[in-house]
Image (cartoon, rainbow, N blue to C red; front, side, top):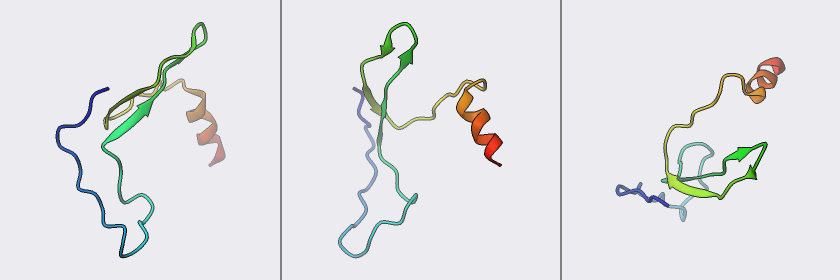
Length: 66
């Protein structure tokens, strides 16, 4: 695990409900998968950009919805 050294300020949840999509976390859960080995060990890491293979079928199906 690698934890962030600059944590985000926590929002005040006492006054009103949190609006969807306005806040994000300092960390993310990632679980790699391969056909040969299946799911690998889950890892928690600092929030970072993800990389997606352009041939990923999820992208193709999502585009077809529009």
